[in-house]
Length: 145
Image (tube, rainbow, N blue to C red; front, top):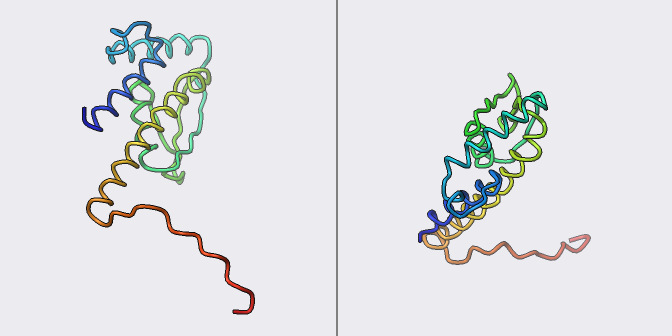
């Protein structure tokens, strides 16, 4: 199995975990998992009205993942005029955001960042230089020199 295939499988398992899948067959049914989460969102929306929430995402990869996850569940992310590109606004029930959306995003993001780091390190090692370690720490300069 390729690295990318392993990442895809890991992301599917994380999604199934947050959808509350009970069997191995359900874990493999990504569409069914999405529908369960959408149903959960609809149910929470009746009890817990949507509020405007602000999310700050540190990099373009995290932001793209978060936007895609929101859209998957039928949520409409946006930014206000003059907000930073790293800011995402969302009208969502607080319970869904705190119990499902944000925890799922964090787990997916960890998996994605690990994959991107591995690929980047491998490409640099194979095309630029084999030593991809961090720079050594130099002692502080002596006073007066």
